[in-house]
Image (cartoon, rainbow, N blue to C red; front, side):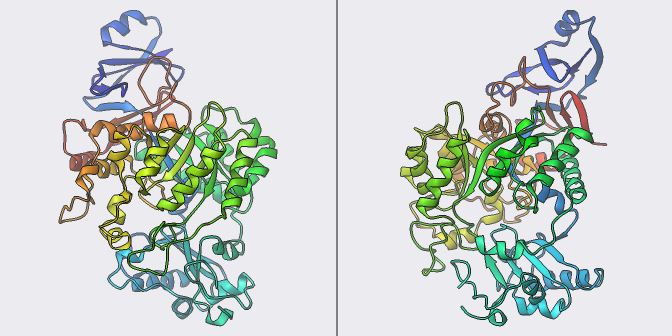
Length: 531
């Protein structure tokens, strides 16, 4: 038996302004589109429910093309620092948590961002020792490329004679003079000392994340979580339990970090997954860091730190070996590259070792690109995973860090579309808010939604409303190889829908954020409905 969805504006996303009056679905699949009368006549013996859209606007289900689903769920379980506006506020939050936690237990928090503070001085080991002398403390920066710990955490990690950090990670003499700041791969020293998350904890984080994603209009996500929680097997089992056994429907496309790709290949559960809600995709590789911590790899130096040009996570030889391994496993690669030199290194190795037939590689972030890199990507089977909301969080400070006079393309979403490149839209949650509407707002306006000055950053890089929505529909479907069955409202495609309170083509972007999501539908089931 099936359902008719009608009495609203239904955009198919097949092409701009393409609208149908009604949709008929059965068993989680779109069977036909047309007028309500046509569908009722054609399927009169099979219709068991008519869903009244009540004048709202329906799209193919929105999918976030790059995030960390468990990490998002952890923001509801851990101390969240992302909205704090000073170093003192962060330290007070840690002190408050000390009063609630048994002595010796770990205090873990995420999201501090010194670019929000008037005084941008870093938190250090000594400052954490003052507020938490008897608890190991680990605070991860919002970008997850930098963390800071106190002495008790360093003791737990058995750090003796450790060197002091600089822009390259870890480099002077003794643990008692170390500032407690660890960058990029040096973070592993601390992360390996943190007590492993239980499968119950991972399941709880996933459930909270999915529920929140539903409320934001998301029917799915491409997520990278499998290497961060101590046991790959426990992590993949948590996904399997929540999505299949709970069950909580959510189209989950897993990237496989290179650190666990061998385990993934040999894991019976991962290799036997055959599910419309859980699948494994590309091998994830980090090539550089982030602009916030000045670890993104640049061809030149940072304008506000001429002694630094960022960090290369791997040597060229190591990167080549990783890509060759992915190809030997039949996998595309999904590579974190923020700096322009990082992107060049990725393109060089992709050109040398072509993607396996029928697969597509991804350049994740692509915030700084040379004109040459843009031209090279036109000839490659590659998708650029962009995060539009980075514009609102990174500007204006990023212009001081990179220089307004650069000839690099910065956050150049419109330039990418004009070049004919395939783009998908994500949030990188929990680094940014998981809201696709906020991503679309930023893509269209190039503004920060809470900036009272309403400053527009690089107005020439604004996207049209249609292109912004395509990032989370046809774009995300193409990135995961599902352009044949997801991302549009078309016969034979999955019955996943995101229903908005207003029509974004007829209302201002500010109204999108105010009115928000009316309903989220996955596999023909309403998983979220706004009261």
